[in-house]
Amino acid sequence: MRKFILIFSFFFFFPSLTHAASAGSYSIAGFDDASKVQLYVENLKTLVSQDKKEDIAQLIRFPLKISVAARRITLRSKDDFLKHYDQAFNSKVRDALAKQDSANLFANWQGAMIGNGEIWIRPGESGGIQIVAINN
Image 1 (spheres, helix red, strand yellow):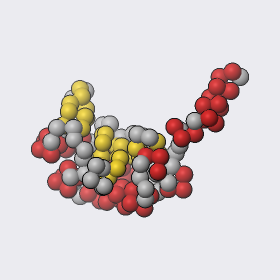
Image 2 (cartoon, one colour; image 1 turned 180 degrees about the vertical axis):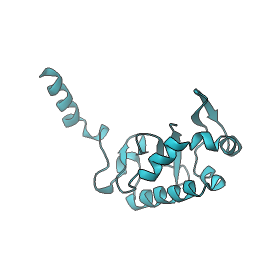
Image 3 (cartoon, rainbow, N blue to C red; image 1 turned 90 degrees about the vertical axis):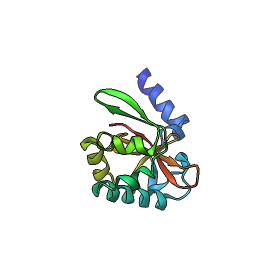
Image 4 (tube, rainbow, N blue to C red; image 1 turned 45 degrees about the vertical axis):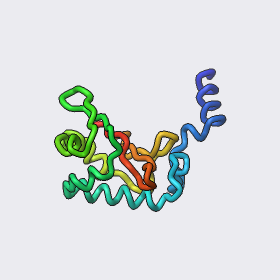
C-alpha cells in the first residue's frame, strides 16, 4: 500500500515529468506546434522507407551515439552517419518508426519519443526538429 501511495503521489505532484503528449500537445518537449512534429515524423518515415540517407543526415544533431557490434560509438559528422547508416537505422529502429502513430508520441522534458525510445527528437537550434538519439 505504501508503494502505491508513493507512486500515486509522484504522478499527482509531478505530472509534467511523466506527461505523455495528450491530444497532440508536445509543449513539454519544447515544441510549439504539434502539427509540425507530426509532419516531421511522417517525413522521416518516408525518407527512411526510401533510404534517403543524405536527407536523413540533415535531420541529425551531432554528435550522436549509436550501438555497433555491441559497443557504443559516437557519430561526429554527416560522413560518420552515412558510413553507419545501416547500423543506426537497423530493422528494430525502422520497425518502430514505421509503426509509430505520428499524432501520438510520448513526450517529456527530454523530447518526443518514437517507438519505445528507438528515436528521440527535439527542437533544433535553428528552429527545425532534430534527431538527438537513436537507440538501436
